[in-house]
Length: 426
Image 1 (cartoon, rainbow, N blue to C red):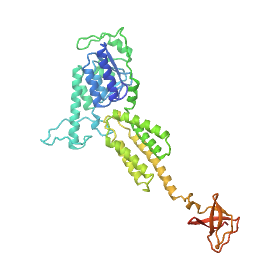
Image 2 (image 1 turned 120 degrees about the vertical axis):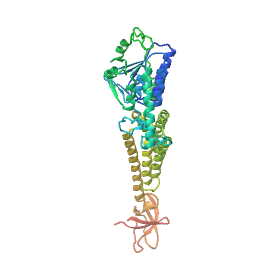
Image 3 (image 1 turned 45 degrees about the horizontal axis):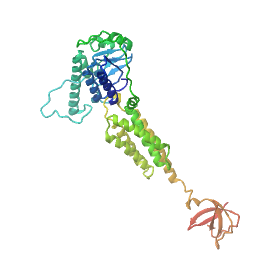
Image 4 (image 1 turned 180 degrees about the vertical axis):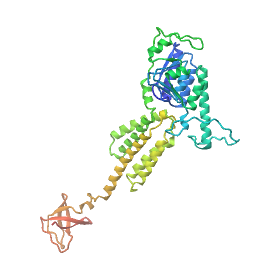
């Protein structure tokens, strides 16, 4: 399990743990390197490990691997927990309750409150009395959950609780000394060697010498869906699809915009099914693009584009309901994407305004200023034919006192009822 803990990696781990029990495998080894993930997915993995009849070993490796946040719960839930030197475990505080970008701080102990004031409000982020109460409750619950998991597996419950309340971390050697893990192994071969003859608390003894090691990698479908569990990729696919279909809508023929936009949007919708989203945020993004498209056809001088930018920004920052930074949408991704979309539509809008100010070049209005040749004498007493833009027109002198001979060049000054009023070109 390399990457975030999400519904796809959860299904991958739980499925193979269940298969191992059906196939009566002697051991399951999970190689773990995760920055964290969704609490709901973490709970299902922890439940599968705690209730597995087959011994499960979680190895945080190789060197440099993380068992952060959700990974801490998964590691301490294993029958045997191991780490490679240079790996790290801890920082399991429920970060959904801390302001974005801030490191979670130790939570204060619960204070008695007057009856009727302990109400859960929408104050997410721990802001205000209600938000603080919600934050405290969730922190207390998560800390107790970590403590119970550690006690079931005979590990250090005090450290597990501190990992939640104070976001403490530990390297491999410190984790071994504190009773958080059972073994240090720098490779899978070394791990198998140390596991041979290892006695579990329930009296079972592991045997790994001569046992066939069967790897169970992710299927191509799971790998693809795991990539789509990245909100940054899903966001780019969503905006790219909307832009491509907008281009196709403005284009007179069906082409690359339809193909690219359709595929991008379908892949984005697959990712949106995996990740927890806010439907209103999705609607704001679509509405923002629609406003920009309308501004290209209506003379609002940028008002709709401004509203579109605001709608896009608000929709982008509220699209995903993901508290863990390991899965959060990057603010730079949002700013760059919205900036690029805005630049495209401002360019289109600017070209449209320039086109409105440009003098007509087609139709009767486009004849004004055109140069032609008189094919017949022109005077105030009678009209004659002139050749302008390869066509013959009836024309008279714009100045009634002027006479124009055949063969002279003329300039069109105005058009009235299909007749040209011209003057001699000087």
